[in-house]
Length: 330
Ligand code: 8YV
Image (cartoon, rainbow, N blue to C red; front, side, top):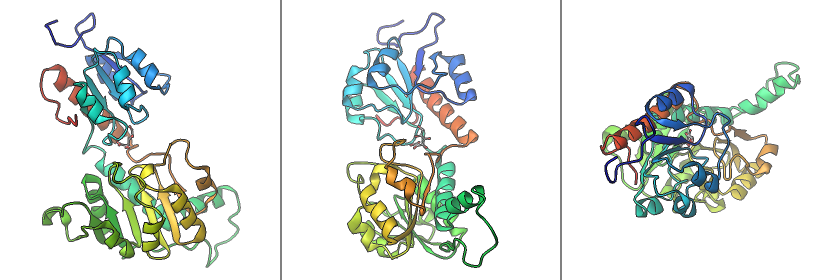
């Protein structure tokens, strides 16, 4: 080993801690190319366990279930040089603390764009058309006859969709929404070029678009600025009977405000794939028939979860070959 180069296992392959049980094809590639420390029991590790397990590992492949705050980063053994997260979101990692310590951090953009946008459409349709209530009714054996007024929902076709955050995923949601003849509005700090905007209407101030939001799709990252963004005051700006969907991060929504609006009928429905403190979501959602709930499945297709793993490994491969990892975020 040359000075400064990462420690390697006995056969020359770098030790790699893989914190969660990943799809078979991903684990097979990790085990082929690394001295991989896998987690077949899929135990969720806290910061202290992570620090212990990372001993001797220059690379760790984490997921959003590991909170790498400043304390967890400080506790990592010195030999850890790169953290590759199996996610596009990086809100679970204190990037400043990682950089200050000289840690390289990478994520997995692009490969989950389509699956997550598909999931946003699922939530739009499922929430608007009361798919959860319908399924529960059928499964409970309580569907007695076709009824002209049974579970009437909100029409999706032709409505206005407002997208908060028009990055890769927001733009993919917009493309799908156009197939439903929806009128797309969006808000980002900077207006997109026309080829990306595709006729959508830009609002510099996201509050300006809320009165138009028959549907609001949250597709922005969780940052200090977006935490708690959808609060009671902003929900009040939306049309009565609007629908909110969130495939981004739970804490962007103020749960008290959203639950109050779903209870009062101010909002017709919400479709939620992400939650504050998931999987221990606010239990009040469980009693709300107009909340269409999914357990953070936005990227959960075989193709996408494999591609996320391969992308994380591509970044690790580049790092250990002495190249700049393509998806470096710190
Ligand atoms: C991941 C996600 O599947 O990539 C992200 O940021 O939220 C999800 O799509 C999940 O977080 C796995 O780490």
